[in-house]
Figure 1: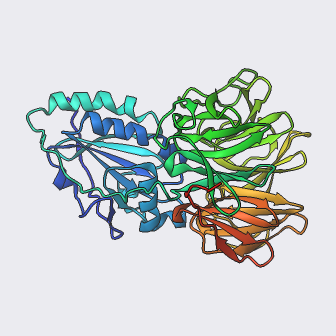
Figure 2 (figure 1 turned 135 degrees about the vertical axis):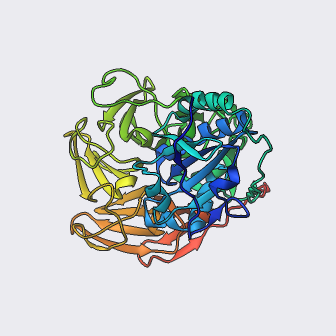
Length: 478
């Protein structure tokens, strides 16, 4: 019989609950099967299991309670407000407790993100699972618990009073990546609305690509659907889109106004060491894109790699990264990355925002070598300017290169920082942003998305002064 022997430790903390109107204890869930999800919101693997959790919640709505235990990695992830923004961004519909001091994490003996813990209707721990594939792993145990504890189960649904602020379609909602075309228009991933916007430099919306519904449908602009689009790249009259949560590269024909799928099936794909080195692969949470020559480079955040698409054949191949999550320099396939999330270039050198290591990496596409001009490792982060040996970033996800300066969206520090590559120094250009996600240089100024405040700013490249771009959806009169 599937029966736990150890009482589940309590799950209250001093930091409070989110996505609910009260605190909860294990005792409150007597007669329920409980699934605890230990997560931290910047972790791509934690994001991957959100659909699995939703599926389990829907299928076992009368007997299963899911509780998020947010045990933050980064300092910026410890704040209730930033956790709440992540809850809204990812559509989490169960209560979440802030475990900022790791008390619950330690009591349950958790060692990795994500980890799920299953608790039986008597409040006893059944076991835990580290990693993804949660639905397939947990479902058989749920079925067994249902059968063996059918006389003890409380089938009365628990109301958590989850409240989400309504999304306004006439506003930005978690804007992320952006690029500009030759005419100076801007394409912006309005990721929370699952659409791409084309803007002029006054902030006027010229076109909307995507219906706004969450999905994976091709078709014209009004029919097509995306699921949290991020990186963008232009090649002739084609706009490529990193459709992150669909694990796909979408293709927008800007003349025909049609959206199709260039690569990816929607399924998560993992490749390690010598797996599929010379055959086409599928993206895994692609986060940013960059065209260089006849190739489209892909920051493949979910598998800690850089992929490369041949623009002629639109086949995607592994390019750099072993698939291990680590900060390791060296030849392309021996090097390792940490959730690469931003791309820029100067000549043949790719610059990469390696988010989980809070690092800036480079890949020389001619010599095939990976180096780290800024950053130390997975757990070395902070907010320190100065020489690169001392400087620290916190989960950077975007960057732009101008001459010998790398402008960095230092996301969890809410700043734009500048790495002077020649002098090997880092300085802060501006602060007061809310998870800046991307940067472009256009007409002598920087354009930056402030994702968690749902804003777009221009920044004076010399003074750091920022000004909001008021995005307007009003129809232009001709």
